[in-house]
Image (cartoon, rainbow, N blue to C red; front, side, top):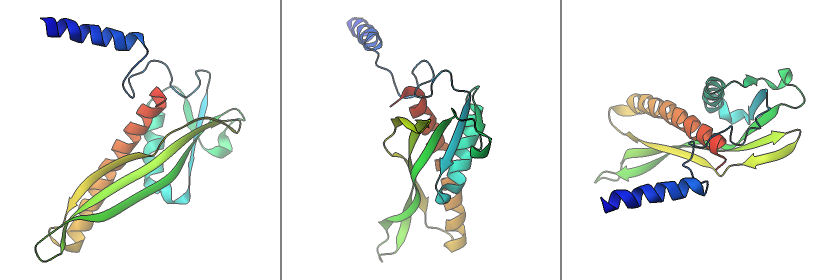
Length: 166
């Protein structure tokens, strides 16, 4: 009973000081409440990650996600920077051949309005494993499945950061 009382006190105390978990804050986070348009831009190598993020961002609220040429002057620009998708050997068999690979998706975000930076994130990373079994074609197919899952996970993390401001 005492532990329950202490836990309730801790939760109430943290809420009172404004503490919250990433993605669990109230309000619009780093996106101004009066924003009506969002533009998401990235370097050429962002490809599929940019597509997944734009799709999830468009599903997440009432703000229209538009292309740069359709945007009004006061549109909020979300810039994806440092986008990378990498695969590196992470485990080896007795003969020294890689039998497991670590796939990592990483990028950071900057939010701008009228050229002024409103917020910048640290790099957001997601990673997963690919196991070397079945030859090069099977490994590549597994890598593509893992990458798709990691892109979705990255987009969810990024949305959580935008909502919370962390």
